[in-house]
Length: 359
Image (cartoon, rainbow, N blue to C red):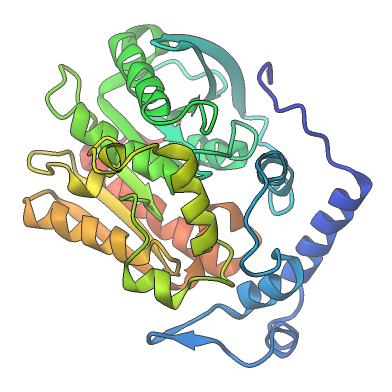
């Protein structure tokens, strides 16, 4: 039974629906036509952009360099989540819970296979959105796919957002949610030895912080999955120069996100905001997924290297033809779907014999 108690109140207009229909139609065009309509191939730093993504950039992206407006950003995240998603699978139920946290109740959606009886792996998923946007709705298709393909119980955490709740409020929500779920593993029917944490962009930032902060917890995470991770509060890497505008996520937007989230240089240098500055020794294994055409590319690579240097088992993949929002392009963009499928294989391999098949 699906109970969307915490669904976002945004509703798609007719224009939104037409745009979504148009996006799906573009994705279904024959490959030769896609390449022709996309224009001359874009190659930067030895990387070649996927032609379908290049075409969607031309037709569906905002004008380059445009700084978001908060309400519009949040609405866009939620509405566009439906553009390239398929109907939810009825074999995966969704229920809503609230978890007590230091700043009040934390909303959470639980995605779980209907009829699940034996303890399953858990996946605490933290959505992206620059700590200013994103919601249970914007990443519901992602959480649902994780539950289905990994045969795990997914807890999608609706942590508080900036600028209304700047650092460290959202992080403290996520730490509290992890502690509650780990402490009540038996109640939730999950295996405490197999708690995965993961997210995209700002959600990967949360994930890396949580892995560091709960390294020595009674029940530590078993695996951290970092999609297109945001690892520090600076924008001075080479990838910011190469991909400053024109590839969905842009440097002006990142500067705006940072201004919303951290209110001082001291906050920006805190490892709870910038996990690249934190200690990585003794952390759980990691899967790091990086998009080539992404301003965050280089800090993701730097964090993967730091994990490896600390002796952490780390699988890192660079999908050099993709852009930042790659998890939201599955299953309609083949290049993003291939990256997703490889990620699922890496997660299952990382859990090795601990993973159980779907029942």
